[in-house]
Every structure is written in structure tokens, then in C-alpha cells.
Length: 132
Length: 119
Image 1: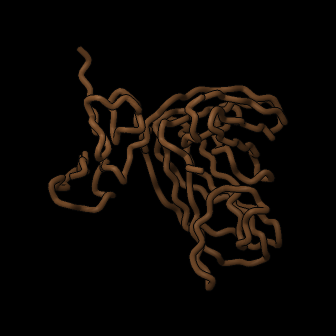
Image 2: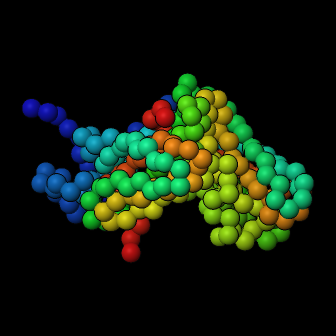
Image 3: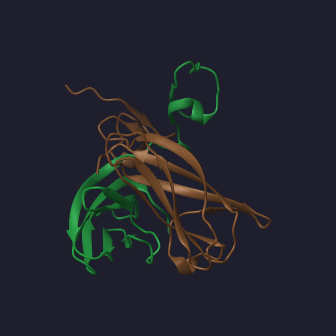
């Protein structure tokens, strides 16, 4: 007999439920695991409208991990949290173009949408378990 | 009474009601551990679409990563003008991936039982 650990959501019978979404945890299903996370501060020189730069930080893993990430910028207008998305959907001064990983680093690609300098980017990444 | 499962990080007392970042596992009805439904790879030619069927009947949480050779992996969905443009849309029956890279690329996808959004 296979032994499992299951924790159901409130109001659901853990012994009879079959829908995977009825459970908080089910040991028969892989839980996608975060194996590393980190933050890095970076700046991109203004360099004129359209200048693009990269902020990088080492992930410390022995493989190329799948990563997701977010960037926070703070200005007089407040705090903006960015996610990589299409250029035309962002009205802030900076565009978070992409996030990618190689065997050593996590890289945040940032484009300057207006000719400003001195902005500090607070970048955070989450690296997951599966080598790519 | 709601159920919870918690495993604390080293040197943290698991019985003490700490903050979520003090646990390696912190699960209850409000903090669901995401459960993997399927994973795989698909090769898509330049400027072409690739479809992965899931048939869950709702929009699941999905991650897609684009491989560039053997040394780089990008989270798809970024700016179309970025160094590695690839996008994906998730429907109630499938995931459609668009390759705007130059050349055929390999995409890794991860689809979860947990809902990506509700309509």
C-alpha cells in the first residue's frame, strides 16, 4: 500500500476528495520548489532614451535554473513593482524587458524609457528546482 | 478550524507563530503549495506558434521558459523587443507559445493544477 500525506482545504474531506485543487498539500504531486532566491541593487546609466542595460547577480547553483523575478523602483511618484512585459504596457520611466539565467548569474534586462539617471533598481529573483 | 502544515527553518521554533519567511513549508487555505500538473519541452520554429494541451477546463498557473542554446534560459512573456522575445497565452484547454527568436528554440513548460486566474 502506498503511503501518502495529504492536507485538505477547510471544509473538504481529505479522505474522499479527488480533485487536486481540494488539497493544500498532496505528496503524490510534485510541489514546485524554490531552491534559491536573492536580491541585487543595480543602476542603468541614462545614456539617452532607449538605453538598455543588465543587472546581474550570481545564483550559486550548479545548473541553469528557471527563474522569475520582480524589480522595484522608488521615485517621487511612489514605488513601482515591475514584471517583464510588453514595452507599450509600461508607462513608468523604465521597462523591465526580460529576466534570464545562465550557469552562473540571474540577469535582469532593463530599458530606460526616458533620459534619466541615478535610478536604483531593487531586483529579486526566485530560482526553481528543475535544471533547464 | 482550518488546517495547516508548517516546517520551520533551522533554529526556528515551529510551534511559535512566526512570519511566513521563517518556514520552509507554510501551507494553509490561504497559502497553497502549488501542485504540478505536467511539464515538458516543445520545439518551435522562428515566428511560429506551439500548442501544449492541458484540458483542465480552467486557466492554470503556467510558467514557460525559453532556451537559447545550452547556456541561457529566459522567462517567456517579456518585452517583444528584448533580447529573447517569446510570449505565451494560457487558456482553459491549452497553452500557446509564440517564438519570436531567430531560429528554432526549445521551450520548457510547467503547468500547475492551481488556477492562474479566475474569469
